[in-house]
Amino acid sequence: MRYLVTVLHRGSIAQAAKELNISQSSIVAAIDLMEAELDQQLFRRIPAKGLVATDLGHAVGARIESFLDEARILESDLMSLTGSPSGVLRMGCYAPSAPYVLPPILKAIRAAYPQIRVDLREGDMQSINEMLAEGVVDVALTYKRETPERQPFEAMFRATPWALIPATEQLAQAKTVSLADLSKMPMILLDLPGTRRYFMGLFDNRDLAVDVAHTTKSSLVLRGLVGAGFGFSLLNICGPTDRDGSGGYVALPVIDAEDAPRFGLAYSASSARSSLVQSVLQTCREVGQAGAFSHLIMADS
Image (cartoon, rainbow, N blue to C red; front, side, top):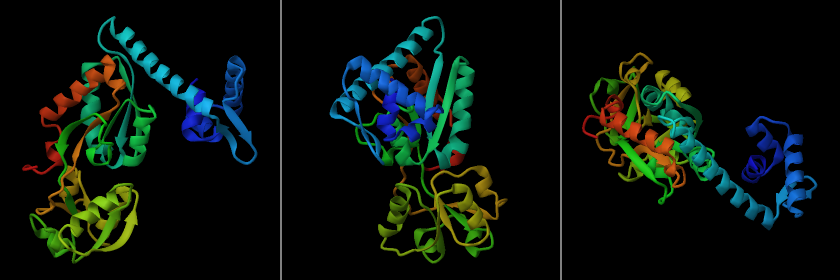
């Protein structure tokens, strides 16, 4: 059943086999067996396209996916009846923020619920939303900005943008910067789904033009380019090492960036029924309330 659902989501046997880490022949055999059991065709075999789901295949897949979600919740709840919540929690995380927000959360989960094992998946905001919608993850640490309106979401903090300025620039000696100050310099843009629209929108809202000199999908490469003096950049979450100049740049608050997105935990309505997920949600609330993320954001945000 998991094989069939994965093929439906990925659109190909090859991609499903890669995700599940099994052979393509195993997936074909499972689908053949299910079609034989139902005495119905769930996929059409089309040359050069592989398997294409029939209407019945989509309907059966939806029922199976719902059943698998319920089975996971039941398994977790049954295991929790014997004591503290236990089982596997599948957690997604927006990749650029992972090094900063994951450690305190994982430490708290391990301390409070040693029987919970966390299976981590990283991605951009678009892929995180897809993972939630497809049931690949139970919860995800991400920004509210790119999640569907009806998606359950618990905010932990607001992430006001920081500007990363090469240490060789005179502006790096300031305590804060404005968008007008930044618009006079070339920009290194983090170009992931949702980020270009957001960061460029900050300047558009103030009728400012900005010269994007380079784009990258890696926050690590971005920091390297800024440190080498190729231009400034913007990020919503910065750690202490971003502010001490050790990387050849400093992070300064952007005083007139009015759009500060909420960062928190998104989850599905079905996963919220699990005692395991509820325990983790409560842990994340407590971590946030204890100020674990205060060093990542501006004091007045």
